[in-house]
Image (cartoon, rainbow, N blue to C red; front, top):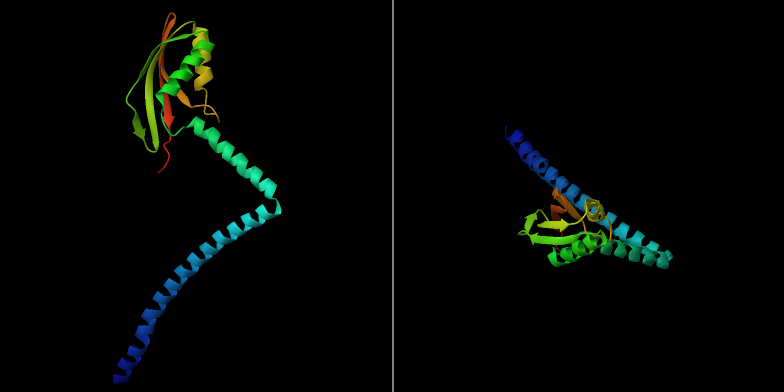
Length: 171
C-alpha cells in the first residue's frame, strides 16, 4: 500500500503538469506562427517595393485616389448644404425648379449617419425622371450616394424624400 502511494505520488503530478505545459506551448507556437506570417507578408511587400518601386508607388497612388473617390460617395459628414447645391444644380440641368428643401433631424444607423430631406420640384415629368436617374441610380465612385423615396406627382409639382448617408471618420 505504501508502495502504491509512493508510485501515485510520483505519477500524478507529472500527469497534471505536462498537459497544461503542452497546451501553453501550443498557444505560444500558434501566436509565434501568426506573427511570423505577418512578418513574412511585410517582408514580401518590402521585396516587391524594392524590385519595382515605381509600380509600387503607382499602385499606392491609385489606391489613394480610389479611397478619395469613395469618400465623395460616402463622405464623413452629412453636409445638407452640399446636398442642397447638388439638388439645385441637377434640377436646373433637367428643366426643373427646386421649390422645397426641408431636412429632417439626422439619425444614426450602425456606423452611418443618415438624413432624410423632404423636397419638392416644379417642372415637367420628364425632368423629374431625369433627375432621379441622374442622382439616385446607384453608388458610383466620385458621386454622392442619395436614395429617393415617396415620389408623388401632381401635375407639374413632384414631391419626394431624398436620403443622404455619411460615414464619419473613426477618431
